Length: 286
Image (cartoon, rainbow, N blue to C red; front, side, top):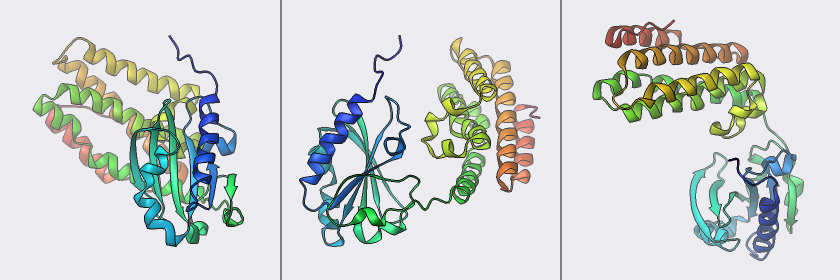
């Protein structure tokens, strides 16, 4: 059965509730929408991105109260937080409903230094903040930086088949194989076709794949499910075949992504891992 939600009414209601609550906090001088609701690309499961501008003199107080600020909108069910490079702060929250809200706390004095991908939709502004909100996104630079980070992260963890097999951690091996598909393979495919999709949350990008790429990804996901469906421990030959295909496809698509974006691919790291897999597990990865 598919989810019954078919529209963005819940998020639209949240936006109005947030506007009223935030405007009532006089320490907050402006608020605006970003993300998909600013770009008119939202769907029923999109997060609501709301940015607030806080004068420097009020920053410490608002930051300390950030969870209460969220609670003033709706009861807070849970959240994760991320400091941003331009001295802003992101609280990704699930509020009662449930609905998802990403609240960006920004210093009024530093609005020009933030990276912005879309024109904001202003909810209220008592400090002339809107005039300082300009799109300044250098997508090519960010793509290259994120691709380089993805390569470092992938090869950092690329001993996983040997380590998990050696410890007979089969459930973790199943999870890790799936994670590799969606954390590394899907973004590497997406960035070759649609730069804008590369900046969306990594685990929501498969819907932006081309039909041919989606077929490859779905095929690997199906194979992972089937290899481990017979119980644990799984059949060693099937585990080996799965990892030969999975790693080969990930290497290929990462190389193609690097070629498309002028990023150096770590050939030496790949070749060392190829020999490691052959030596330890007799894997033959093309």
